[in-house]
Amino acid sequence: MITTDVVVVGAGPCGLFQVFELGLLGLKAEVVDSISRPGGQCAELYPDKPIYDIPAIQVCTGEELTNNLLTQIEPFHCGMHLGEEVAAVKRQEDGTFYVRTGAGTEFSAKAVVIAGGVGSFQPRPLRVTDAEQYENKSLHYRVRDAALFHGEDIAILGGGDSALDWALELAGKAGRVTLVHRRDEFRAAPASVSMMRSLVADGKMGLIEGGKVTAIAGANGRMTSLTVQVRDAEAVEVPASHALVFFGLAPKLGPIADWGLDINRKTINVDTERFETSEPGIYAVGDINFYPGKKKLILCGFHEAALAAFAIKQRLEPDKKVHVQYTTTSPIMHKRLGVPD
Ligand code: FAD
Image 1 (tube, rainbow, N blue to C red):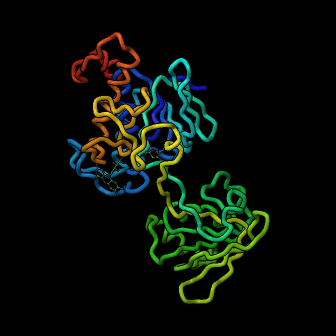
Image 2: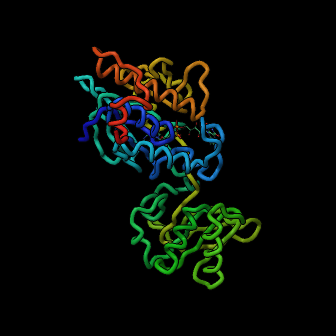
Image 3: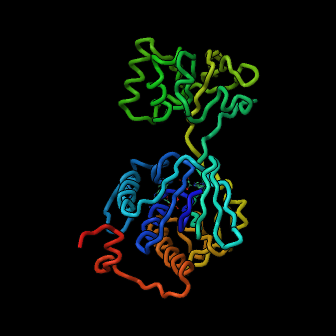
């Protein structure tokens, strides 16, 4: 069990900045995100796109914003638990919160901040009959152990970076690798696409462009081949004992809906003084919250995180007044930030 002041659910820009605001006030945080890298939508949906409305930063990409936020929170040494979805949040009798992830990590926290954005990102599924019966046996949405595929015939579905990275990684290690993509253009990095095309030209990898998987053949969760429809042509059978599906990620509100909070159409109602939900001690910042006038913008989430941090400090120290201090001049904040005297 990890004991901390605050568990922050979500490592998007607002969850990361929440760690900073809590740290300035001397509060420790643990951050949990269901995807394997921090940055939320900025990292997952538009890492290379320019953002122009972060105050005092004329332009930065989603990836640069994430990296800057990660650097900014370094002094606070927060725990970062990636690839784990927060499944349960329960109030304990002593007023603390028990938080558990799907992977079984447990926390005891004095407060919880939900910075879950548009929800927890989940892999987009392959929609063919009986696909579920093959899931995690021979149909995979993430790679846990690449050695499982060595010497096996595999099909990789998708045209983005994950699909191309795994196709290149497994070519030569797996038996036969066949890449199946619905379109002719690939979203992956151009260097990966040209490397893939040269392997295909050398006969070291199969490629089907404009192909859609319409059926899986096999039994007891073990696939033997995929049927791929290529536009108006005849369907082809691709022998495969495993298929890796990388159709991207889509957000789902997920378990947050079951935590007994006042939910308003996939968002959580909060007040605008503390950004507290209907459950005292549980706060919500960023895209996930709702209040009159709410705008789903990063800079609005940053403001919300600052006020939520003050409210949490006040909740944890009810007898003390929480003063605003300037980072420019406050010796205690310099100490927390590791700024030399
Ligand atoms: P998110 O970025 O959505 O992050 C939430 C995180 O919480 C996710 O990583 C998710 O996996 C995680 N999560 C959710 N539930 C759980 C759970 N139960 N357990 C664990 N983790 C969980 N905004 C601007 O201000 N300026 C722009 O120029 C701009 N451009 C944009 C362009 C595009 C294409 C898009 C899609 C959005 C843009 N936005 C822009 C909006 C901006 O990205 C969002 O406002 C911002 O990402 C919200 O941050 P967040 O931290 O609240 O949530």
